[in-house]
Length: 329
Length: 304
Image (cartoon, rainbow over all chains, first blue to last red; front, top):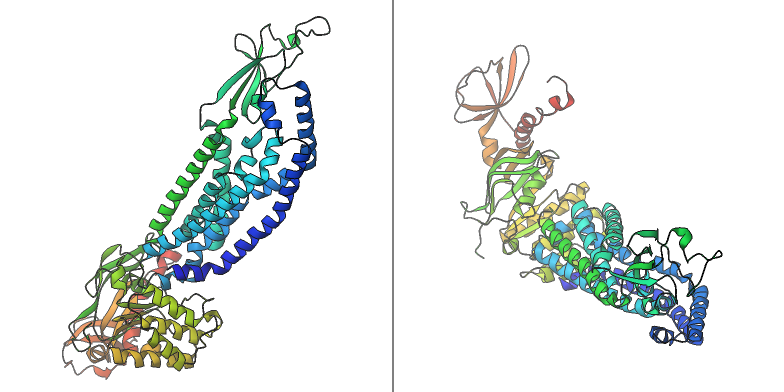
């Protein structure tokens, strides 16, 4: 079985490795350039310095300026990052969907399932080997991307929790890729033709990913709230890297006055006609900025939960696929 | 493995009221038959009659929806061990088209506990099949030979072939059947091969199963079938009993005269009838014509 699997998929494996090597050849130089710029701008120490409470105003300004310059230079790489999040889907399309569908479409399932190996074992070995290879692939990819996007996420205010960068790095690519492959395999056992199976895989992958990302992820842990006065130095810098889910300005009694806004007045500052800061919005004295957020240090917890969700979905789909394989003739 | 040829009562394949349904349509229904060991059996019926379904049930690809199927006394569905005794060549002889014949022989060795690779190589060498060319680039006849060689390398006790010659030209057909007969004659393997054309198989088979409209129309040894059927020509027949006739399979009438194809259960003594011997093809056609016509009138919404 192992020999057969290797013989059947060696060409595909070679192309996949070539594609990965090409991707690395493209991204590694960019990553190195980003890192050297990051160091030249003196941003390497900024994160730790800004995290301290007694950070000097001058340091903060230098760092912010550096981040801005870095962002101007490399910000458009976010577009590249958007392209990269499609990679797990591609693996699902080209490794998952054809695994059973191709056999059935060519009729070869009737050859291989009538030899001395039962089809349950065929499915277990085949799904296992492909999932295992994909697991290694996705781990390498995830670690590589963690290295690559590191400067970009440090420079961006939302940090590693950013919408796209969270999906690119760490261990979530493993979950996404396994899920994509399992979805492809399962779709292949239901539709039994490659093109429909690939189409369903793509649609299903985008649908589930979007649903988890937009609806579920923010609820993995109860969000924390943070408040700070509308007069003063501004939000404490520890909030850098936090994932802000909602923010606004509230009156002392808690009613939301300006949703999605944030107000910052200089200490003791007065408006043009001596009005209190924000009075024209209907803010009463003692109004405060409010934000609902997931703290930055929950990054790995969230990565683990999201990976767990997708790995569980993948296992469920593979189980269903094996059950379906037993009914295909 | 004891030789099975000669022990005529051994049943290789037995089905009892076997049925398989796709959605609401029965692909095979109330199918009861048995295939004695050592036979070369032809499974004949028009396209869509349920031949492939029956073979897939026998090789365990399909699970019955009704009744039972037994191969060597075992239920084949989900029975990996039983698969070792069954050689199967599916319709259109599907093989991994990018594999060479030599690689397919290796693959078979990896997939089967009992595997005679030397036999397969020898067959393929004799037939002049190139070992290092992808089988997708071989001719249809060569590909069918590769599939047959792989099925025989399992040293099966039952060989199931689904329309093995349908896509071959007449010469390749003959060569294929010749090489098949040559190899099973030595080993005593029971063979069940399907075709929508009786003419393809008539020369090689000694047992016949006729399927039509999802049901078994006729089954038995070829010699018996030919011996017990007769064509009667006589005065217009009104449906009354005729001495020695068990059943009228097919009747056609003109104003004065009836032509009947009948199954006999004794000598026909009524001198009004002229009795003629029939060929196997006459018998099969009579049973096929009986089975196929009823369904479609209502589907088309026209009176029968």
